[in-house]
Image (cartoon, rainbow, N blue to C red; front, side, top):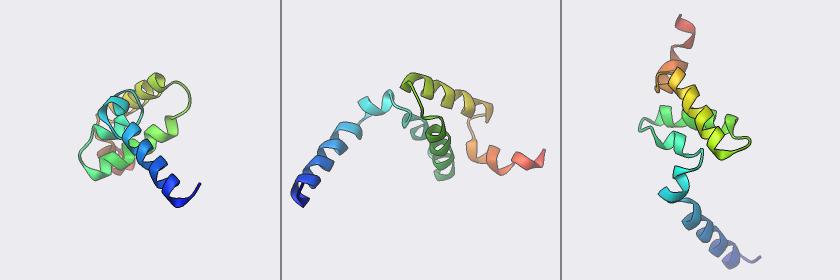
Length: 83
C-alpha cells in the first residue's frame, strides 16, 4: 500500500467506527459515558482489560465493575487505600 491507499483505508475505518451506531454496541461506549478526563481514562482502562470475548458480555462486565465504583472510577481509584 502506498501513502494514499493507507490514508484512504484509515479514513474509511474512521467513518465506520467513529459513529454512535458502532459505539452503542461496543465496549468503547463505557468511557464515552463519562465527561471527566480522569473517569474516561480509568473507565477505558478497565474496559480494555475486560475486552475479551463477546461484546455484550464485555459491556455488561464493565458496567458492573463501574457500578461497584458508584460510577465514579477516578474517585474510587484515588480513595481506594483510604478505607
